[in-house]
Length: 53
Image 1 (tube, one colour):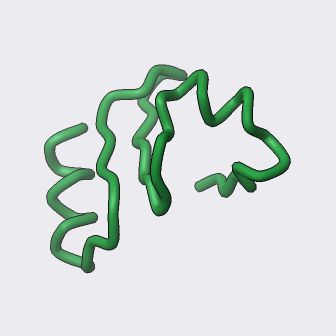
Image 2 (cartoon, rainbow, N blue to C red):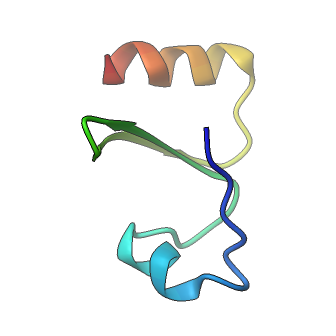
């Protein structure tokens, strides 16, 4: 798990295509394999992790 302050790390956020927050990105093997934007509940996060695994 990692948290990024997009105000202080704008280049990094832009590099991952973060245009809105909250934004959740799942990484596997060092590569982004799933992403969701907006407020999602527990079920939404579980679905994101399932799709990315």
